[in-house]
Image (cartoon, rainbow, N blue to C red; front, side, top):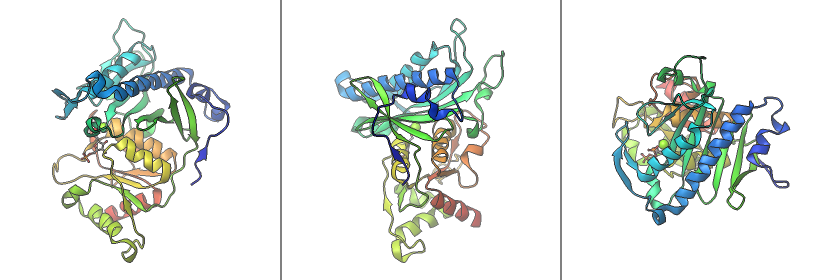
Length: 341
Ligand code: AHM
Ligand code: MG
């Protein structure tokens, strides 16, 4: 793997964003400020996650989101922290969240900026109460037009139009993973200094892998191409793929994608027949687009079975999508299986 480890002088997130590393494609100052703001929100969420039961913030909130999913107390807390910390930054025109019914436009009495921020405030909800890694996923778009009120349709931009994307993973370490279109960098939170420091740069995903991630309990519901591919993975060295595969499924997309960015692999949450009218479980704008931007920037691939996720023109804010992403040769194989059925 060609991922470079950063060992000597510690470079903070802020210093990295302002550094010469990015001269080929420098980041606009307001975007740097926005990313720093988001990173501070992630530090606050990380602290709350660490406190857990001590602060009585585990368990269900007794409410549901627009997608009919039960909200956990920490889902709502993380959502509120992101909104509060970014609302008065002067950098945003509006925000959208997996946990909000519609967009949150910056109120008129506050300064407006040129960016749109989208987030899944706490991904991996089913893992919150069991102390397994969870995370915050974010995507940043440019406001498309000047001087007109922002509407939901301004958010409906294809993934390739993202100006930055990333996630914070709240695991044994809190790690911020970021792309601004200049490759992928990883920053680890030093809690004593309340600062994220660069710990991996120029992350590259190996093109080949022997590790797949999928919720196997849904196997009987999948479409034929996914059934065929996973059966071949299970067949091991004596099957058509001629290698033994390992399987991992954390059920937190942040953790599964982090493993793939670290050592390769293929992640799949495909369409299945349980709810045939839904294209998939995961959300295009809050999960699939930002993760696909990271994966492609690290040399991997990300598709919905038919096309590259970053090329999909969104039709709705809370749109769902099938996701197959990771090591390029395996994702290409799954694409070919879809084309041959
Ligand atoms: P969430 O945003 O409500 O947490 O749902 C998304 C999560 C992903 O992180 C994960 O890949 C998937 O749902 C797990 O689903 P399942 O419980 O069906 O395995
Ligand atoms: Mg999620």
